[in-house]
Image 1: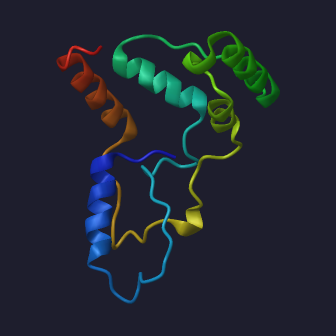
Image 2: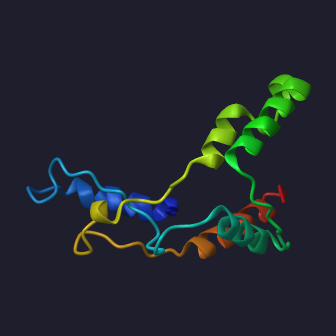
Length: 130
C-alpha cells in the first residue's frame, strides 16, 4: 500500500482532533487502491512517471536472497541489493488491512499514487537530479 505524504499529514491533523470514537484505535491508511500495489504495477508506474518503460522479472524469494548474498560478497558495503532489502522485496503482503481503514467521515485520500509519483519525478527533474 502507498500513501502520499500530504494525505498522511492531513490524516494526522484530522486525528489530532481526537475524540472518543478514535481514541486507542489503530488505523492503516493508504491511497485507496483496492488490493494495494504489486511490485510490477509500482515499478511500471514509477517508470511512467520518469518517462521510461519498465519490464519486470518476478523472482522467488530464494533468488532474491541469493542475489543479495552475491552482491554483498562482491560489493561489500556498496551492495545495492542487501539481505534486508531482499527480505523487504520478498515480503508476501504489503497491503493494509481493510478492517483497519480510517473511517471515511474522518479522512479519505485525495492524491492518487500515480499523480504523486509524477509530481515527485517532476521535482527531481527541476532539482537536476533526474
